[in-house]
Length: 181
Image (cartoon, rainbow, N blue to C red; front, side, top):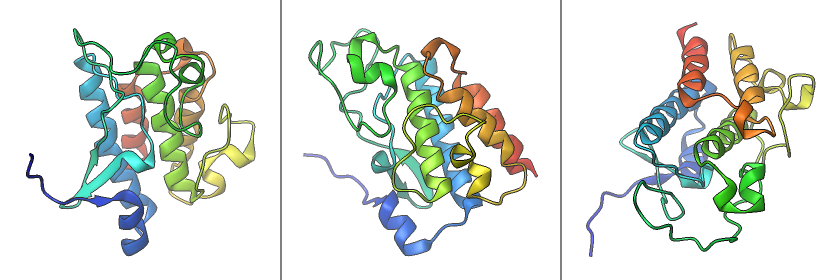
């Protein structure tokens, strides 16, 4: 058996503390950095969503690596098996999991998660969160200075074509621009 510290689920943390958009964005920067480090090691989570974020000692942690892929390790999921939450998964993950690069799917799911947390919605808008859709813009819901950097990042991250999505390093830079102001 394992002995582990007790963390708080993100939904309970939000319910109890009503964190500001700034606090949420700082926490999501921690998650972004974690994902960036995982990707450098060719580890892909493949199930990023609010339910898989825990808070421990005011630090944000990604959890539930049940469908993650690791280099030189056999996948747990079966070929052709559809995975996880429909609301946060990249389109290619909804077809079959082995068609997904993992990296671009994580970027898509991270963007959907970030959008949900800062917009106050329970679920993200389906499909691409394009800049020409006012209901898709975080600036419609969140009045942080320079939030338009995140609108741009989320638009790029939720492109249908996985090869058109940026890397996590680029996403991190957008978040850091907002936090710098």
